[in-house]
View 1: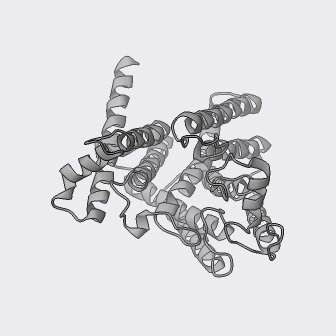
View 2 (view 1 turned 90 degrees about the vertical axis):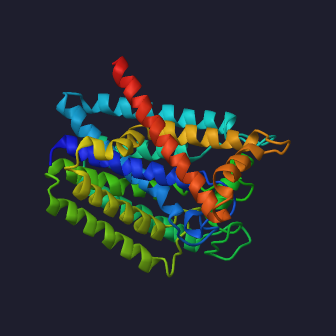
Length: 364
């Protein structure tokens, strides 16, 4: 399989992930299917698989991008400067988004978040790429997960029993409250906190290891199948670990990393097998959505929140409710209406990505 087709399969995977993200984040109401809602604390749903998939993509993309830049003659220092600039820019953009789009009225600016976590993981992966010792990457991920498990099961908030994994009692959330105060998502806990960024980096390292292999070997069906098998094995290991160290997206537990990251690798392998030979028209919308993932994430969230803010009939948030009622309320149950609205949001986002790409193509 050529490099171009490998990248196309990755774009398809990224597009699928963006589509699922919008489906989860933009429902037409509060009554949603449980699998499309994040677990309240411990547990694992389909919604909880979205963010780890993005972090796996960060690792895979970084490996492929470094290989391409090296082929163009760039030095390691040039590659690292470019990666650092991108990561810092993304972190700053995340702060701006938190300050002006997702900020609660009267609340402080949240320091961390989805974009900031992606930036930090991207920076960490870049450091491993500059180190250029592939043999240490998988062991480093394993070491991070083991140390994080030890910290969360041996430490806790002051006055709490060791290994307390409750929102108030766990060590990671206590550290966030101590260091970030009122600059978290909630007063008690931040799902993109400081300490939990370490296992998030391990998630990206899983992608880096996979991306390194895609650079080294041709992604023929047998190699893609091997990647899928490895992903499923990791997912099974995480499931076994979850019996003693529960799945928890808020804490980004080690069992969650293995299962969510492993499933992401398995889906990437499926994309390599299924879409590697597909003509562009068949996967064009997904590829466009994948190539414009950041814009899709920010704009979908902004438009969705705007529809919830604008009044209709004098009621706050009435415009979004009104649209759901007009389009789906008369013939679908509340859960299905919420899902149909989210699906329509996905289709509109994909159409916008295709239109933007065509417009940019005409200008170039």
